[in-house]
Image (cartoon, rainbow, N blue to C red; front, side, top):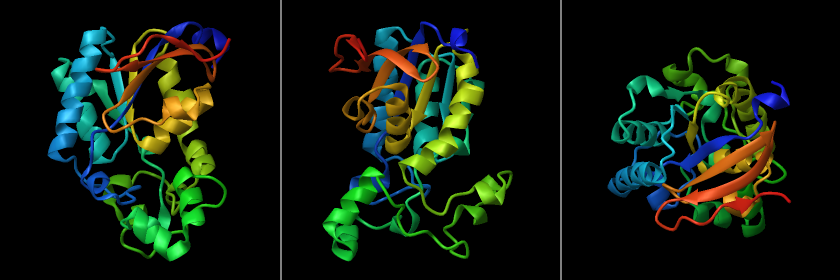
Length: 243
């Protein structure tokens, strides 16, 4: 897609899902399909209300196939009066696959592999976590929801780089195509939003959102954000991304 398709586009709303049951327990979740907690539900409601106050009502909400994000997106859509068809789910927006770490607490990972290695895996730097074997029934190849995805594309583990290789083609090939004529929202996961945000030029601190958090970004060119603004009760002023 040419640069003219992005010029002065925005805002694009980037949001993280509400708290999940494993967020509350400090567990690595990855592709494990856990639900929202009651707090997570309220965070989704508050997210929708914050968007409405800002006046940035999305025409389309893209999200993952994991119910903590999908439920958040559906709550936002319903509260904003959007049709169910406004929510579009794709496996390419699923959270980073954490391999065999999925289900372990962060303390268990540190105790097992050492704090330095645990920190590197948590940040998605360098090597990927130990891969989940394909024969493991927790592997996405066994989940019928992914039956339409070529088996070779389903991850067994990922770092930020391999997550980006999975996610960015969907951003450029599908989501970006709507930016000329629509306000777009992405309800995603911590590493997905961070990877996309930093790819667009945001610093990691701005792109690392809390549960139920959101930022609005304005785009100048392909992969180039020029400004961002937090969304919510502590909404900040418009901040330039680059001078």
